[in-house]
Length: 496
Image 1: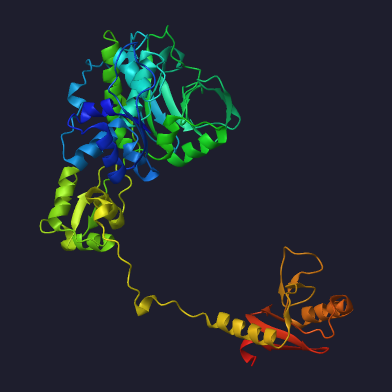
Image 2: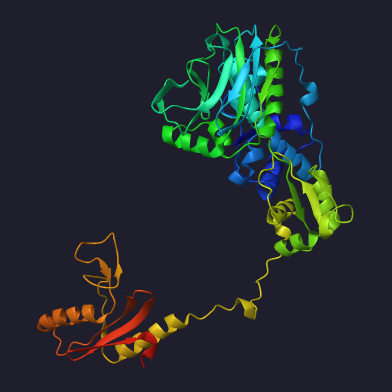
């Protein structure tokens, strides 16, 4: 994930210099793979003081850190500095009643929000939008498409905008695609869908966008005047499988397949609407339509300072944990004020899908304090951790060593035979049974070795086998060996 230092400073103006910030991110959040200057977007002679962090966001934090605001919020809490909430700055004109309808008829879409905006003017984006996108390697297309991309990289929620004139019936339907249904992507590629994939279509089954990419059908052009915004929360597994099947990898797919909270959608719609209002002052907004069949449940998580200290191997006080929870804006009850059984109880923020159990909170607290504070100690192994001795294995080794010491050679014969007590269905027609003894196979091996004894330079053939035999109601491990032409077979534990 490419993150612009100047973009971050919109939200955390008190951030330290770029190189120091890169170290802080690496030691407390995620590895910074590189820190570079922007390569494109500069006007001739212009000096750019920006830096671009390439941060390796791992899947466990992709829910909330694949965005500038996500990283900025994390750093503000970590460094205990001010986070500037942009929401009060968003200015959106009053909206009018709408005829737009949304239906969700698939479990692969958890929430769908839409809005009609009329009288937009499609054109080039303001310089600050172009510069923001170019700084992280994104190409500017037009002001409407750029707004959707800016929102995704800013708050982490993919969004779509498409031509209202192409939508039949003013009805967005999120459903499973049809088998062998063909679409043409915005890139011009044609793809064939199947019923395991999720799409958003109009009333006449024209696909407007999918979980991985938009389609050419309702593409925004310079002649577009009325648009629909669509923001969804697609199931991560179905998006991942769809992307793999169609061989499509996009920034939207990356976010959906790592899972995003449906609770992020209203904010993304507000930000996107405000951006379009700023770039298209004459635009007329209609009411938002929101379909949210099953709301994300509120989650509680309990943990004790004692358990966190034990997991980390570091003594952490209740006061230290309280300080961390306050900095990160967790709603919580401390152990002495409502916490259950001497534990903290927190309300997990909706975007923090990674916090599930006590061990997750131990990791959270450990990385905030700094892993360098965890003392490296070799654990003491008590008697309860001594490995159990496998007596059967010990006996097999003992028998094998004795027979090898007596000059025998070990052989392995077929388990499948032409007769027996246990029949196997998927086997060769002449060997449908599991062996009931080792003697039959060892005798065949003995005869074969005798035939070739001259070639092998052997005056005497001495062979043995240790293996499992299969009786009707049990399995046993046997030992079989020869004394000249006779085969002797015993249960493993009867061998002396």
